[in-house]
Length: 130
Image (cartoon, rainbow, N blue to C red):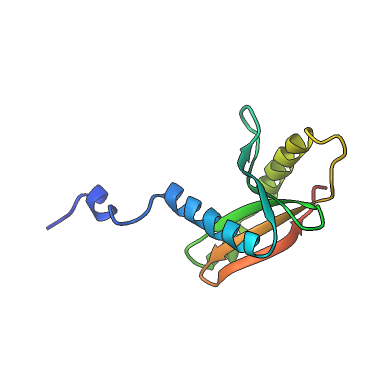
């Protein structure tokens, strides 16, 4: 008997659900490391803008813009390698927009939390705004 695709996939989480679960796991890990959540899923207005999964603050006051990436396996470099130049530019654009609310912006960094076949990997200062 052949089952409809929707029935075969009924037990699997949607892409959105999997992404939310990955963000929750990353958030829990970062909070356990002493970071405090400021914003979740920050988006710039309009088309072509950027989005930041988590905006955190470290104990020393540094703003940490976090991209969470999940991949089923490590093929093609895994989850961390999937944060390419275009994605980095969009994250930086969103960070610059977020920083407009600060009269004196604090120190900032861009981290990536990668979840793939090797587990959770937290890459601090994974890329620069340059």
